[in-house]
Length: 166
Length: 166
DNA sequence: AGGTGAAATGTTATAATATTACACTAGTTT
DNA sequence: AAACTAGTGTAATATTATAACATTTCACCT
Ligand SMILES: [Zn+2]
Ligand SMILES: [Zn+2]
Ligand SMILES: [Zn+2]
Ligand SMILES: [Zn+2]
Image (tube, rainbow over all chains, first blue to last red; front, side, top):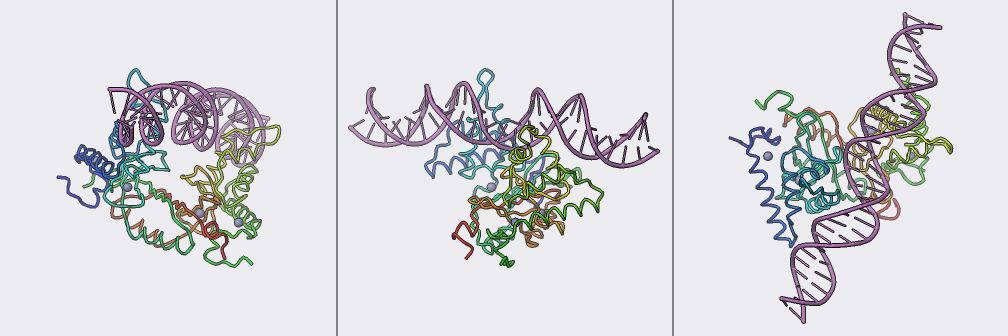
């Protein structure tokens, strides 16, 4: 079963993804309740759609999925929800892809750090205090006040490289 | 005088920027000559325009500057030059800004690492082996083959924060 | 329950960034 | 010069994101 080896940071193909979605939605609901925020039906739906996979998804893909057969949603509908979800750290934006992905570390404050596979499209969020410290030290040296961070490493994940996680 | 203190990684307001431009163009010419590449008039002009400042500049800004009064240049004109310059490491793309900036480290191979000031818009390129090593170690742990990196730290630079570098 | 103001959403239009496709030119090789 | 290739011009279109304003929903108060 899905043991939490290091390599599983890139979620195994056979992992129980319904659990990922459920956890994400539960955590979002708890977070919003505790902070007096409204996780409206629309925002909840957008979050759920973002969590449909571990692949960053584009705003216009979401827009299509939100649109019902007869009623077509307009861009601000999804962008406003994405803004809300980002503002509260429930999702991250992947600047190099113009795409959005659920946050895997809702339990603690962190700067976003992603490894993103060019082949399968999956993104793994990984904390590394060494990186955090190094950036903080560099910033201090420069007298630079850090407000936002973007760290996106693109390439090929182990599964795509070797055909399987072995 | 422009002493090379650490803080000058954010170039001082009074630095000799013509020297920056000249160096960048000279290095580009040398690089292209040595590698059998053609630094055409257009590519040279785009590189020069990117180097007009240390602020990442948008493709459409460049496009306007390239256009002469009577003749308006079309997007592919500038995008193709930008692609060439990026492919050969002469400039970097800043994904979080959809903008482009000259490379400050033409003399050695490196992953792009930027500190970008929200207020003055200037970008400082900074190498840090500790970050390099940490990312390499994380990638190895994940079995991830790294192909491209994006590291962009946004915030407020020392000059903007304190009114002057002191 | 009804009134009120703020937050959220709907809707239309448009801005900003980037690519495709195809025609033409210039430079290189034979 | 013919043939080939890399580079550029040009028109159309794709993709991502925001502005502006109307309407609805919700929390709160009376
Ligand atoms: Zn999952
Ligand atoms: Zn996160
Ligand atoms: Zn300079
Ligand atoms: Zn560089």
